[in-house]
Length: 390
Ligand code: DOR
Ligand code: ZN
Image (cartoon, rainbow, N blue to C red):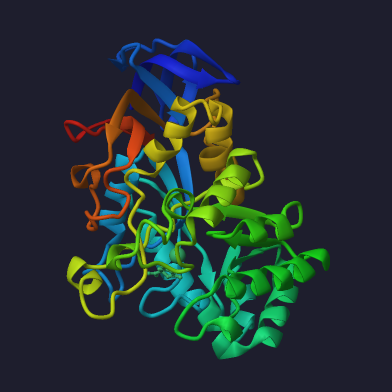
């Protein structure tokens, strides 16, 4: 039950050569050898990184398994060097009770990656006491169904229980068929009021620079690869349909500038698979697949000198890990949750997708670094051969 991974790693703010000894799923040493342990050596073209953590994915299953499954979503995560995810509760049924919440976590516990889920808004807020979730996801549809006063009661409960309210921030009052920027902006204003009252709030998939400016320092924020890299000016077909929608090229550039300047806390995909025939139907459902390639799209900013490696890890590893209550550091005593990337440039293609969803408007974009091995849950998976080393 041990293995050693040798190669260049980013440890403590610098790249250095390590010999990571993993025993029983735990990093025992950065200079280890270990008796009788399998040794895997990676060349200078490779880099060992702390595992990426994605706090916004949709692994579906439960009535929606034609779109994605827990197993398929995990394969997509591994392809991108993602060792842990937080899933969304908009399954069928929607995860609004302690019973469903516990059942979903139990199903996720046997996946090859670490798995958690945001709880959905319960009608009976007593369910929160029973479930004790780390976070609750609030959709515009929840606001439309239950009203803002119910959300405010939920915020009170969450404060007592120590959970974070995660907003898909578009005020349903401003959504009428079209989803104009005002819907997000007015929700951001409201979220700022809540945050000033001391509630712990996270805004996921910010799509407007306005939202970042309104909430910076008050709430935590994440941005998706598609809102950072695609705009409605250039991407308009059914594959580009997503909520919140892609914004104008000008808004996208300003959001990206804020992101690169450190004004956004985290990077998260909102990997939201649908079947291709659904996307190509007369009424395509919103959602973009990206989990498999998200890390490579982020590492591109490092390659281009626009982010440091420390920024990349802060955005997609350390802060999301803290949010999810996980330790993904490369240090003795930490659970082995890391990835090995081959440092090469490539253009994203459909072949890079390993989950159920294998199409994306991100295809064709320039990317850097491919995951070739992922350590999580005590096992090192070699992605090229499918071999698992424990
Ligand atoms: O584009 C989206 N897709 N936005 C959402 O809020 C839901 C998600 C989904 O579940 O498909
Ligand atoms: Zn989502």
